[in-house]
Amino acid sequence: MAELRYKKFGQKVREWREALRPTLTQRELADKVGVSYGFIGHIEIGKTLPGRETLKALARALGIPEMQMFREAGYLSDVLPSDDELIDDPELRLFFRDEWKHLSPDEKDWFKGFVRMIKERRKEKDMAEGR
Image (cartoon, rainbow, N blue to C red):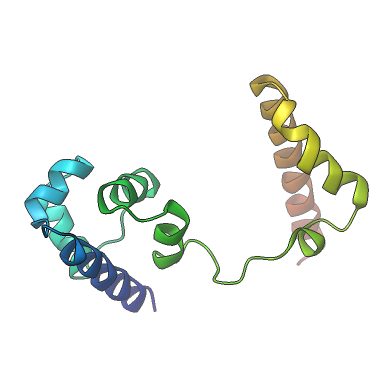
């Protein structure tokens, strides 16, 4: 299954590259992205799937929105849940909509650490219960 995803993504990258005017060669695209042209070739034939930073650089070089690039690479679902489905608590929805952007980087890191701790505890509990 991953092999098919890699091939589909590689075909899409080639389509995007060849749709540019003037068309970029693999070498020119590689120079813009900061990788070897052999790596671009491996992407296009479906031999490999680039990492997050390379996907961002590819998106910039090809003029493709990052979200579309990540979706095509299979990292994002085609159907994203609405805010109402994602967080059903109204107070939390308002917090993330209105307050998150005002938190300092340290406060955001603290919050993320807290969430990681909760996830870790849930995983440990599930393992203890044999799930």
